[in-house]
Amino acid sequence: SSAKSIHSLHLVALSTNPDITKDYMKIELSNNNKYKTLAWLKFYDNVNVKSWENEKHFYSYISSRNCKLENVMMALWSCKSNECRIQINGIEQQFVNKYVICYTIPGSDIKPLGDLIRLQSNFLTPQRITKALIDIIQAIQSLHLHNIVHGSIGVDAVILTISSKECNGALLSEFLNWKLDTQETDETRKTISMIGDIKDLTELCQQLSLYCRQQIQQRSNSNRSSLLTSNVDIEVARWTLLDKIVTKIVSKQDQAGFQPKQQLIATFLAIVESGQQEMTEL
Image 1 (cartoon, rainbow, N blue to C red):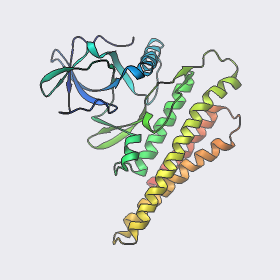
Image 2 (image 1 turned 90 degrees about the vertical axis):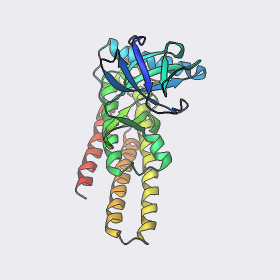
Image 3 (image 1 turned 45 degrees about the horizontal axis):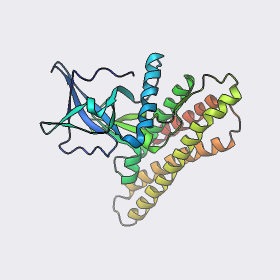
Image 4 (image 1 turned 180 degrees about the vertical axis):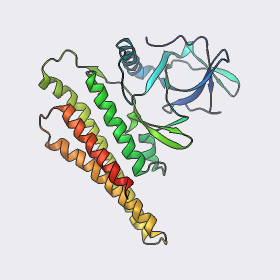
């Protein structure tokens, strides 16, 4: 395991009523009161123990190979729940039959993209989604350069990181179905293996396109009754531009055939970066 020993660490939940059925629990780690740092715990139950093992194996692998990955969520340690006590409201609690991974993330909070989409959160602006897309495409590039296939990219694997209520960017998480392509010396076969990540990315873009169109529709409806039409018009223009960006990625993938995948991902990145520049000029 790439895990540090946790027995010298004291875990304090930063919510008075943390829900361990949710994806992440925010905690504070302190080591003999010498330092305190924020971290996030993710709990797996017996049904998902294979996912926990896969995730542990991923972090163990990248640690052993000293992989320098971009925009990938990093883990501090993992353990079974009987090795881990968490203080909630001053009372230490132990969770039974759970498996834990502790993640370190830059910033003071996190928001999974899937949750924000389901809640139709106002936090999710076209500018923040565009920045998140750039970060996730760079993460995929970085993984593929190390012959790592993610295997299950989707809205729930994209984590937005936050400091002082401002979004820093996005990290790729959930390495539950990752695999290595080091056995493939044939570039065509390696390309086939990595196509899965690119198809997942384009499906994510299709979901974002649908979300953009919902936002455009809502704002177009409110525009009819609003005195602040210029503000609404700018928002509609931004959502429309984001829809154009993600739709362009989907169509590029459809036309790609057996174009080398690193080249295709670089094309995706150029599309989003160009769109981001256009968005700042609106």
